[in-house]
Image (cartoon, rainbow, N blue to C red; front, side):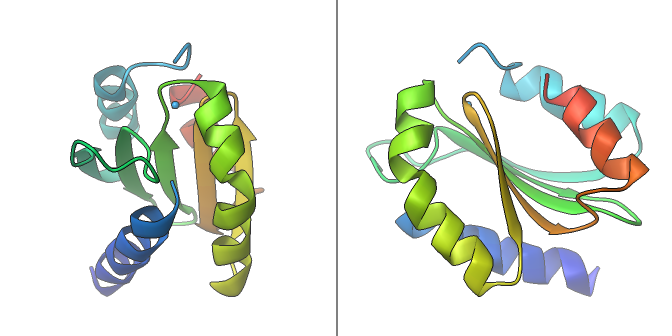
Length: 122
């Protein structure tokens, strides 16, 4: 559980200064991830924060951990991408964009769990 708390701290810092439309809804993605036996925390962001996604999730598995930002449109995700990428690199993480989604992989981006996470986000 300590890793999840650490991920939560990074999530707060990352989304507080940075920041998904045709992608699945937050609720659908969250339900899928829970069905796939991941630990999932998060929800809608505070209203009025223009530098944050509209919603965010922390996804924790045995091999993969990710922070997922859901933006209203791809343009919003695009505008924040550079800043998010810099923060991800600074934390030793890897950034991936899937249209309106921004995913920061804390670990396991290339494993089978990551594939299951991506499937839930499509």
